[in-house]
Image 1 (cartoon, rainbow over the protein chains, first blue to last red):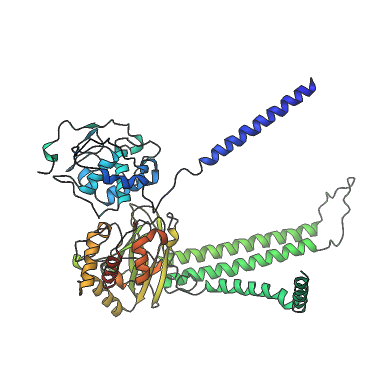
Image 2: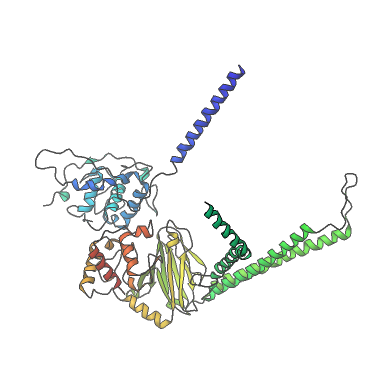
Length: 197
Length: 367
């Protein structure tokens, strides 16, 4: 009887030790949340060349492959995007997402698409009637950071990645508290945003 | 094997022969090293103990007073402690349970009271002297006579991780903007208006004055007067992020005439490219990411995110005191600044070799 008891105790001790070390190992994982890449581009960046302005193409229609922006999982990159949004004067037209001279960026209406690669080409190519082209002016990795931030404005990135507060006084709720808005394509292209005439 | 052991035997004998010197050598050189390191703090371009102005002089004086006083106090206390620890009791008292020593010895009590009273009063006197001298120093630091509205006013804005410098003037065409290098005339109080763009920084030129914090949304003012011509180094003194250590600047104290000449040179717009290479370099600058953040007055580049580069070739350092301003350093910085100062705001630039050389030609012509 006593021997069985002792055996049980030993078993319990082993189980506890094992569980504790497992928990400790799991806690260690959380030490390295993410990488702060100062010199890296998201690996999907090279895929952007496949993005075209028209759906029409010769031959059979190729399946559309969405490009993933890895920066949308990196809080540092999104916060850099937020800083650049101000530094590169995006706020001049789009305000802090609410829109002004340019269209708002925190609603569900997207004239040129809400995908990361579509936002990328909107920034790089520019769009008719107002949006300037930033080709060769903003390095590609910063465009990806900006695209990630733009999507965080309408809650498209995870809450633990989106910026939690502004560096200065701001009236709007932080991006991390924004409820996800499901993007829907614009109901008909507005006159101001038609294809190049 | 045998040869090896023989050799080591010879070596150990040699070591024994020089034993004394060898043993003393490292200790001696360590002490010398320590002393030279300590004394190197007493002079130099970034030392509070080598004052170049009245304010740093007062701070230095207070520092020496405190050092001497507190060293003396430390030595005295240590001596007394050693004496107390090693002194033999003259009359060992037999401590027994039957006869506890409840009757105080009057003469001993008097002696002890005297000791305690003198110790406490010494402490109070020393503290009082230090307090008063520190108060007087503080007052003297901020009693630098202002010369009214005509005083030279320098606005310094801290950024992660560089310093924007603007010489304010009520005539807009007389305003000078530069970065990471401040020139001031000798013997003249200068008003510094200090603020920050992002986080709290601290403005510190040890040879001239104490520290003043730069706080976002608040303008701190401080007067500084330099009485000795020379170049001094300032440094951010409040931890402000990854590259806090590489956030320095130069302060050039020069004669009023030299200062006037420098100021007039800084007022001019950037030099127009005088040859084909420089013209190409300017085109590279204006058509690449440079234009998004930097300003070159007289061109279309008007960014205020990074340092003003209108007269970059006239500065001694680049990257906020991190590197000497040479062509090689500039090239490395333009191509991949993240390797030199990781985390800084400047992205790497993939320039063609020819474009890079042209850009460097142009930047180096911006005297």
